[in-house]
Length: 239
Image (tube, rainbow, N blue to C red; front, side, top):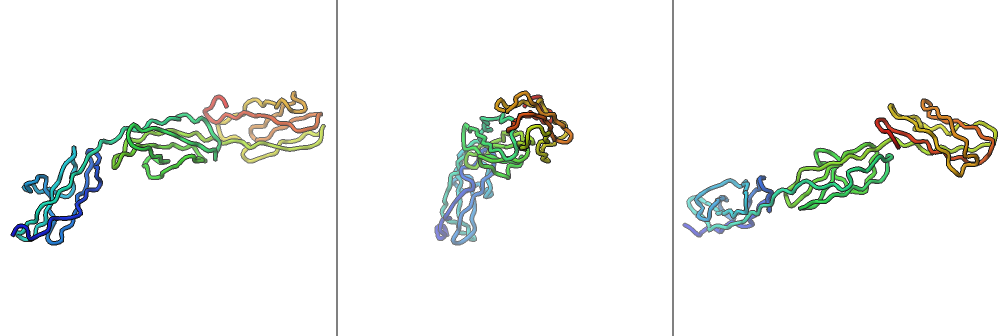
């Protein structure tokens, strides 16, 4: 007997809106009977509960119990197009030292931007962040259930040498403080040292041993000496 069953309730679609070309799952509840889905209001074309609409589409459902059929309920699934990949604003951050703070930004024509540190887009990132090794960051635009293709940018992290400090008396040759990270990585080179203009004797320059990572200088004028020693990582021509 028609009408003895209640129409299905709590109809939903997940996701809704759906992303163009991707499926969405229809669901609902029957107090009695089995839930059936249709693509037409006349309930003649039975469909599964997983659909892939190309435009906003209304789907119909009723409850079946034996030969009894309930009134129908319906739900409309809206469709949105996937956004285009974001534009990354700062694609060239230059070379940075490990632990240096970095903030990347980007814009989405549609949706909001999300950042990741892996190509599979599983490790989300918030900025600022402090990479310790060279890292590629990936960004996508998200609009509802839709995700854009990814855009990426590289942050080059190079080994940076700590400042060397050592004091002593005038007339005594002194080695600069030896630090493990004063040794260059394979392929890196030292540039010519530059004396700080405030050095007691600006004409004094250190002699650098790139293999040991040490430097030596002689002076007859006591005080604090500061030298800038350029370092070029492998593949770099200036720093």
